[in-house]
Image (cartoon, rainbow, N blue to C red; front, side):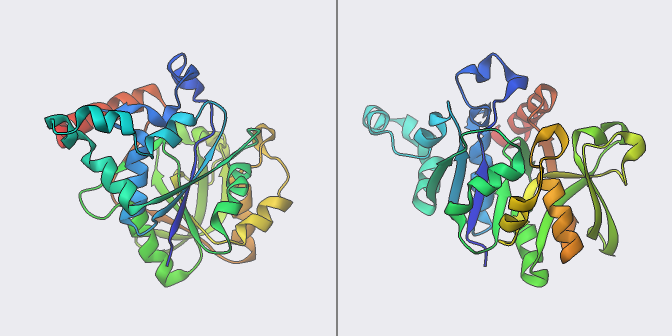
Length: 273
């Protein structure tokens, strides 16, 4: 039912300077695979085989990565190094990769609106590569796609965070429908702990219905003078329905140095070895 997934990858990655001065933060390796590859694998597992990237200046490495490197292929042909490319070769065979450039950084809502030409009038997934989600069973997007088949509305992934950390996230409050699933009634972008409606924080996995584009167009800039997806989703919730899903799996905040190091250590010890 959902065949497309959008990856907003135009951000500057300032928390990882100076490394991100010349390389996209989404290409930071978690052991031997870049962050963005984990997200693409999750999307394709969920049946979202058309992958759209909203890129910006200095992000050419992402386009090159999801393409064939004839020089490299020639150099390692017939050697044991070929096995290292099997994973990315499978992704290239299974996925279709498209790109559009976001000329100005005006917030996540604006980035998603920039991706509209890649998506058309159909529901789609969104992955923020900063959030690395690992599962022994179905991935987070697969779990959310199953919910979408039942409810046919926008869905955001959430997890509980300490109250002192809520100012780093969009935060929801809502009516519990069943274990781990809420109908969103309120949604606030990066509130102070005393103003937060709960400690249920939105993480970088979404399924959005196409009416979101018209709502983004009418949404004025919000916090940090950016078009916040949180504000748009709250409008959508007030007009219809948005669900929040407490997903199964482990999430690492690779947008922070400490979270990135934690992810690298975990993958090395539990996946790579």
